[in-house]
Length: 253
Image (cartoon, rainbow, N blue to C red; front, top):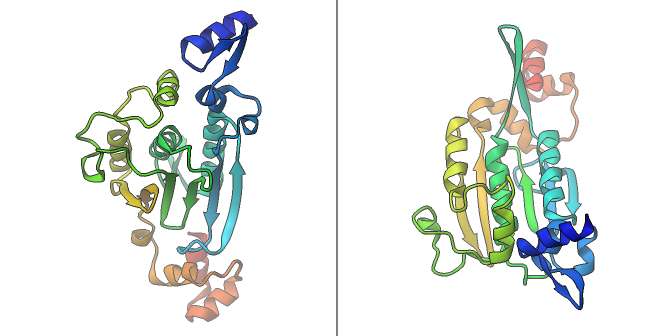
């Protein structure tokens, strides 16, 4: 069984035999090592949910240093735990919709993990959730000659060939080179703007925006920007000089 496993890992270029013993390479370690830290690879992902629009007041955070597949699972748990859901009953079934299509968010995170510059030891991939947007930022600019404006037009150029090849064997990267289109299509399906792709310094960033500003009224937007962690109905009534019914409706939403 062990021999069969090492042969599979060797076949997908996750490592090789050295002096009769199988050794994972860095790409293989990122996927399959029990303790990735032993390989001295900078692979941390910081996940933070902020109260405010400016990223000052933290609601929840977690820093992940696990293997790539565990990171993706933890990111899914974090996403569903910290984003808002709206439930409605249609017929006899309850339907729950989240602020964003997770498939698009996961695709951006997959791209960040597959294409980040692992030689940059002083920075992490960041997965930041704000009231009005999600930002996923990865160390490393686009590989030359790729340009942000031509991402969909060019064939994919991989900074990490072996890592991308292993990724392509998983359910997370079924069709290499179609990730940008899938992100855009999923956001459109949710009635949201297409994601924004930008480079800043030595980072590549993807930004997903929700329609919270279209849904919330002026009072709710002012309250969210006030950075108040807790408030009673009466305090909210006094703040805006409104009735109890209006305050309850605002806060429930």
